[in-house]
Length: 468
Image 1 (cartoon, helix red, strand yellow):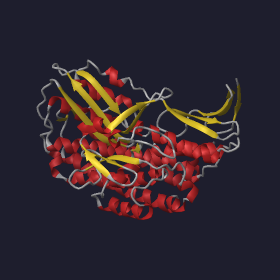
Image 2 (image 1 turned 90 degrees about the horizontal axis):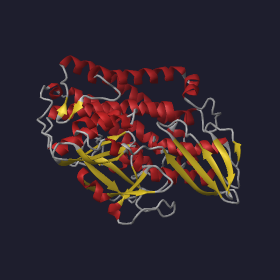
Image 3 (image 1 turned 30 degrees about the vertical axis):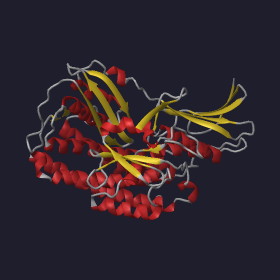
Image 4 (image 1 turned 45 degrees about the vertical axis):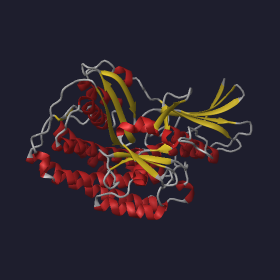
């Protein structure tokens, strides 16, 4: 088999064999995990097909079988080193359901506080460290500088401020909760410790600094990136799909922690359902060439297809999806940003590149929500854990992770041990849409066998937008 290496930031190569020409991009750079892309060319050198392979280990669903359920939230935080808080929190919510635990109101607030604080740090990481080089330096910039070090060289003051704020956010969590990675402080029935008044005031002061930084971030991005995007960039990886996200049942507003799931079709129509009903509404398709599951909207009754012209059952999650499905955002600064966003792009917005803009709107919301929680004096109440009696049951825990809707579904036996588990992580919901987006880009940038470094990077940009 002959291979010809192409000079690109990823290990991209033409591979000739079996009558096919395949361009492999491995690994995909600047994402929070491991993945590769295989682009198949026909005899004319045009794109016949493309496949995204995400190295997703599904073993945790088996690892935890037979384990006492109260151990599981400490185990599944290892699924992701970037967002362990989301798995930790969703898992505890599932265990609560299995045991019928009643979580005190203050514990709910402390859980949400930790999860939303973790969202802030993740969004700073993705936008500035992973996504921004494509926009600040340009998709055609040399790969040796099209990275976070290039950002440092191009704008050292911005880079210093970004690193300082993310580090401060991580330390805020660690100082209060003991760990910022692989947490243990959320427990079945509630929270492992209460918050002192001194801790509340310290976190509140630092959270106000985070909000000012979030306002700077979105203002900087709009003036220097978003307002200047040309039509080709806005259309990069654009597909037409439905969307899934969590909203508050009373008013349909954005929430990252607790509510009901809303499944929206591409035409904007939608219906809501509880976490426990997810298996009736969402199916899980498998493909022989992928490690990942391919969730689809079973409730639409149209089956599953990733055909670009006529997709079936395809929906998306993550920041853009959450902004599309919600009616409004119940914090003033983020709501003002949402109104501008919808005035420009409508509802639902379909452009894949708009995930980045939506991500910064959510950053503003998360900072405002943290301040709301810390200004509530009840968050220092000492009643932070209810009684827990292990036994047989089923629980479905769900939160909105940075990468999308996260579902943990557990069944326990009479001894309170896990007998069955199903986990759908945020990235998994987006595997089918990501495959569609890279195919859309590849078909536009690779024609008649002409392959450029900038074109291949644009294929990767379609993946980075989803933050897998």
